[in-house]
Amino acid sequence: MSADIVKLLKDAGIDAETIKLLFNIGNAVLTLILGWIAVSIILRIEKKALAKSRLDEALHLFIIKGTKVILWIALAIAIAATLGIETTSFIAILGAGGAAIALALKDSLGNIAGGIIILINKPFSRGDTIEVAGTTGMVDSIDLLTTQLHTFDNKVVTIPNGTITMSVLINYSREETRRVDCVFSISYEADILKAKEILLNVISCNPDILAEPAPIVGVASHGDNAVILDLKVWCSTESFFDVKYYLEENVKLAFDEAGIGIPYPQMDIHLRRNPSKS
Image (cartoon, rainbow, N blue to C red; front, side, top):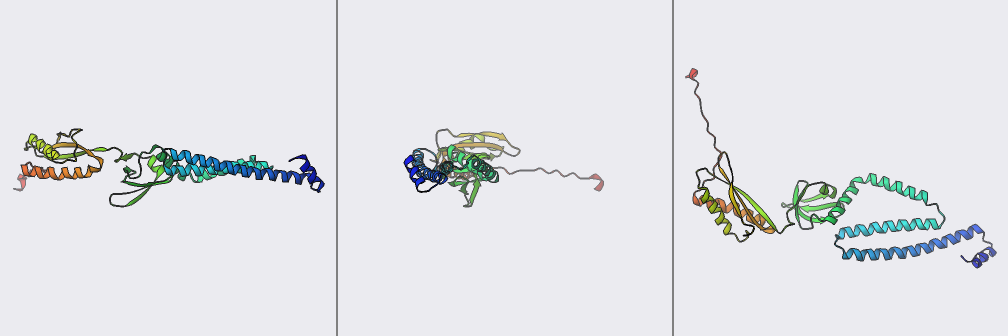
């Protein structure tokens, strides 16, 4: 404030304290205007930068809102300092209040942290089929607090993000191909080479089964009642269940047609006669 304005105000009968207050109010209004413009510019630049990034849109909103809150708090402190208000105690109260809120909302903050980790690392995306926390389903939405998916029998399941980041997660959709593993049992009297030939013939009749990697057919073990055969084939991820059901059905039909028995558990019972009661 120029000396001429100060002199004019004094000549008008305004005391020094009032002049200082008017001076501070003027500076506060100027700080508010300049701060509001600066906040708008910073947020506009941040939005453009986030739009060009690979971060999920849900994370964009969180970052923008967080930045806005921090900038406006900083601006409020600057305005208070301009008005001559002691800001040290205000900052201390703000820090204590923030700590109390963080303690009260620790579970929610843990879920938010989990949401940020998921959105940055992207272990799964919307539309993926995953298994986590004992639930298998397709992901419908991901936000900062929870992830929502629906199961194959169309139940909607909402899982806290903190639970997801602390659990083992299986993503069934991430890779383009998957291996289908089947196990078949044949009797000890059956011809193993013929059974393996039948399995290869069944495989060759399905165009969804990939030639590379090559299918695997082999004897896995000798069970109590049967010889256990392993069948492992590769297919595209979207064809997994079609191939699985095809193999289980058509191998059984082919074995029946070839007379290869699939044994049932058997138990031999021996009766002993008690001579004293004969």
